[in-house]
Each structure stands twice: as C-alpha cells, then as structure tokens.
Amino acid sequence: MLVRKTKSNKILSVIIFWCAFIPHSYSEKLNGTDVSEETDAMSPFESIMASYKLVRYQPRHVHLSYGSNPTEMVVTWSTIDDPGSTSVEFGIEKIAENRVNGTATLFEDHGELKLKQYIHRVILRELQPGQNYVYHCGGDMGWSAEFYFRTMQNGTNWSPKFAVYGDMGNENAQSLPRLQREVEMGSYDAILHVGDFAYDMNSDNGLIGDGFMEQIEPIAAYVPYMTCPGNHEQKNNFSHYKNRFSMPGPYKSMMYSWNMGPIHFISISTEFYYFLKYGINQVIEQYEWLKADLLEASKPVNREERPWIIVYGHRPMYCSNMGTDDCTNFDAFTRVGIPFLHINGLEDLFMENGVDLAIWAHQHSYERMFPLYNYQVYKGSETEPYKNPKALVHITTGSAGCKEDHAEFKKEKPAWTAFRSSDYGYSRLQAMNKTHLYWEQVSDDQEGIVVDSFYLIRENHSSYQIPDGSNV
Ligand SMILES: [Fe+2]
Image (cartoon, rainbow, N blue to C red; front, side):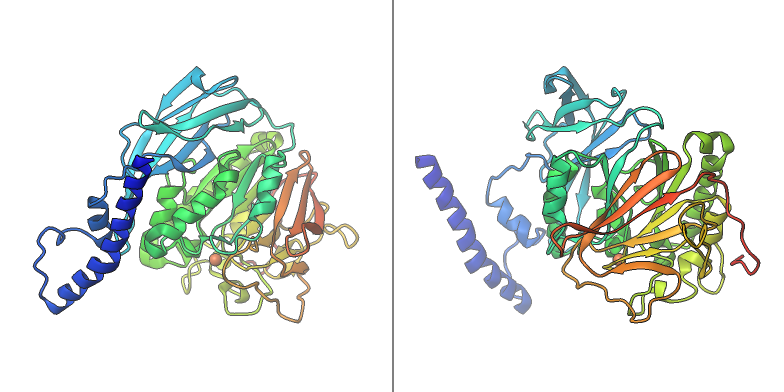
C-alpha cells in the first residue's frame, strides 16, 4: 500500500512538473533567458523521463509474418527500452521446449520528441508443417503473454483462406472487431493488409503508429500479417513501415514474393512510382525484380505445381471513383509507366506472365472489375465472364475503416466495372484448388453480410494474348 502511494505521488509530481515547469521553460527559451544547462541537450520528453526511473522492457506490438520458406515464422515486437536480449520461447506442447535468439534494432522517430523504441525480430526455423505452436517473446527482462500460431501446410493441394483489406486506421478501424472475432474462430490462415496503416504511423511523434500496432496485436500475434506500403507510409522514406514490419526478402518489406498452397503471391510498392523524390532507381529495380520473379513463377513446371499468381499493391490501375486520384486517369503511372517516359508500366508485364488477380486498395471502397486490359473487357464468355478470362482481374478493397470518409463512385458505371460498394468492410479470399479461386466482400456497415462474391476459374494459367494497340 505504501509503495502504491509512493508511486502515485511520483506520477503526480511528474504531471505537476510537466504542467508547471515545462511550459515556463519553453517560454524562457523563446525569450532567450533559459539558464538551464541540464536540459539543453534533451527533448522535453527525455527531460521528463530522466526524472522518473521507469523501465519499459515489456514486449508490445507482437506480430507474425512468414519467412523466406514455408517452415519459417518471423516474430516481431517492440520495447521502449533496450532489454539486452531478444528471444522467443516456443513449442508444440509448451513454450519451454525451444529458445531462439534474434536481433534488436533501435528505431528513432523523426518527430519533434525523437521517440526511440527497439524493434525485435526472431526467425523460427524448421517448424513442422500444419502444426500448432505456442510461443512468447521477450527475454531475460520479461516475457509477453503467451500466443499461438499454426504453421503453413505442406505442398500445394490445400485451400488457404485469407482476409484482405487496405486503408485501416488507428481511429475508426471499423472492421477490426469483426476481423478479430473471425481470426479467433480460426477463419484465416493469413491476413493481407494492402497498404495505408494507422493514418499515419509517423503522426504525433509515432504514437499513432504505436496505437495501431497495439490494436492489431490481437490478430497479428496469431496469424501472419502480410503487408505492402501505401502512400500514408511515405514519411521519411517509409521509415515506420520498414522498421515496424518484417516481410521476407532483402527489400525492407517494400517488395517480396511468397508461396502458400497453390498461390504465388507478389507484393509490390506502387508508391515507388509516386514518390520519385526517393529515387527513380527504385521503380527500375522493382520492375527488374518483378520481371525475374514472374518469369520464374511462370515456368511451366512451377505453374503446373503452383498455378495461381496473385499480385497485391496499394494504388489501383483502374477505378471509377470520384476525385482526382491517379486511377481516375487513363494513363495511371503503374499501368503504363513513369510519367512522360512511359517505362516500367506493369499491365503488359502482368498480361505476358498470365497474372490471375491483382489486388489493390487506396480508394476507400470496394470495386470488382471484369477481366480487363487497356480499358477493354476480355470476358471468358458473356455468360461466364470469369471462366477462362482473356485478361487479368483487378479488385480494389480499401475500405477497412479509417478517419477519412468512404470513397464515392462516379454516377456513371463504366462497362469494365462489375460491382461497386462504398460500405466499410473487407474481403475474403480462398484458393479452392488449382482452377477455382473464391472471393467475397463483407460489409461491416451492414453487420457483416456478404455483398459480393464470385469464382475466378482458370483451367489453363498461361499468359494472355496482348491485343493490338497495347501499352508497349
Ligand atoms: Fe492510399
């Protein structure tokens, strides 16, 4: 009881210090009369923390992602102070069976307070396929709560299930409770978050990003949370995105590919095309990497084994929304290439390699396109447009919920768009087998009802024929 009283007094004294002294100190600084030498080198936040012996080693923001191969799982978390060790204890029956160490990196936000945190990463290797594991993370200074995950099943003859969405904020993350319930019911093998997080992760000295990572922990600590960058992550060359997430490959989570069951997923950064201030070389590097990745995935022997190729990135090539976003322009950068130069456009590359599905977000709405190339529709047949289509299918699902409003559509519905909804919600994807892919859209505004669904059927996953008048 005495201890609690002492702590309360200390907290009170810090608040009084903040309210009374700090503003006064600021005004002195502004007037050039500040005589305090002790606090000159410190930020206001550091000044307060220096007077208060609080240590913060407790793991927070725990989340999972797939590693470079299906037997790996990556655990990422954050601590405010450096606990001196980075470990995961895990096992099939109990956590104490294995302990693996990882790495910690200091991440400093660029905001006024220069807040610091340590990002911890541990790769769990040689896991048994399709197995449930329990784990906790942390180290010698303290452990997280106990979490669990299920590893990826072996091979390609099974039907993985995903929740897919973009544009989910810290404020008004409307779909999150429903998603959490479904994750806890075991409805998904993985989550795809197609860009735009927190709004924004760097806002308020990075505290908005902290709040968001805390919000998604009830999902992301249990199923892999796979991501791509959006425009809201662009501050300081995507520093929060690159530091907080751990996607496979060497490109700091900006682009990577991974396999799951019969699907080869490719995650790209559409933002390279829009933030050329960070270097046009990133567009070129990604294009060359993507070309090589698609070439490999499209080899007959690989396509036979793992036929579905699904690309996801943040900004769509097509949309019928109101406004002036690039997808409302005929020559969207990602579709036909860098402005004026018209190089490194992606639509022809996707056609040449027979990409089955392209998933986008950015527009706070849901839109399913007919099989489409260069604004022309290429249905399989009039009665079954998605059975053996002659071009890839684009879907935009960017309505998970954020502090910005729903995106409205143009009144006139173009011939190339099949279904539109401005409701907040998210998508579900399941690869049924090597020929049938199921997709549906959940409206959170309408209490979780399914407002759209369709099967994409491809009996032969070869490249599409590019008609005359191509983008090349
Ligand atoms: Fe966006």
